[in-house]
Amino acid sequence: MSRLVRVLVVDDSPLFVDTMSRVLEAEGDIVVVGTGRNGREAVSLVESVRPDLVVMDVRMPVMDGLEAVERIMSSRPTPILLLTGDPSSQGAHGSLEALSRGALDLVPKQSLGDEARRAWLREHVRLLAGVTVVYRPPRLPRAASPRLGPAPSSGGGGVGLVASTGGAPVIGDILAGLPRDFPLPVLVVQHLAPGFAPRLVDWLASSSRLPVHIAEGGMKAAAGAVYVAPDGAHLAVGDGDRLLVDRHLPPVDGHRPSGTHLLTTMAAIWRRRAIGVVLTGMGADGAAGLLAIHRAGGVTIAQDEETSVVFGMPRAARDLGAAGAILPAPDIPRALCAAAERLASGRRTER
Image (cartoon, rainbow, N blue to C red; front, side, top):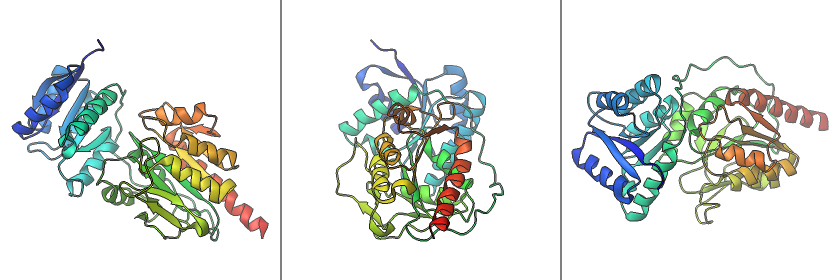
């Protein structure tokens, strides 16, 4: 039998704690080793019972989930899965900030709605419990960044960022490291539970010099703007640099939005002017799309293992031979600026 996964469950509702405990323990390989009612109890219990994973509400009395994540990660770093009742609420913004402090993922409490979702939650808990985590200090204010010069006109290519587990804060840091005159559009696929995309946009905008939008079909991908794939929809680029948003195409390798779908269309439309980046995450999404950009002559980057929360997606890209460079997360903004400047210079030379 595989080893037991030891979980701490923290929520101010005793009924929810009881329900979550029964859901998690249903198959026998997950055991709830402690329960708490607020963030202060969570911090104390992590020290005493040393769980493999903390499943914790965001909004609690005495100490909320955001402060509890900060304290747990600074004293005894432990994988944390956050729960939220309503992804559209203001509390969801705090949940995303908690990801920047080291929490691994966000799951709506509606995940307990049926047996299929409960089975998925148990499998997610097993996977997250095996992740090695480290303390991540709060995001610093944006540093000054040099200007890159005039942006290229339409058809100048673009950047695709693809991430899953641990990716939201990395994307936030990358965008914070790009100058306001960055000469290319940036298209983002970040795997999050349904309902979080609008809050992700707000949260990314709080640290980005570039305007951040939810992508809408028919929008023109403008230089110096960021477009985030909406909930449950593929994001792609089409002729004339128009964005395509499709909620009807089936998932690709289980994902909609799919990073591979985005990067593959970028390779087809922008070819050597496409820049693809695969960041931290479980599985292999984005790897095949990054290979398409590599074969089209574009720039391809994968995040390195040391700075990835989960090296699954970058490893898959590396193993396919799709990554032209494997970089630590802090080096990626500089690499994007250099690649964008080369593209801009090439367009000026062509003229």
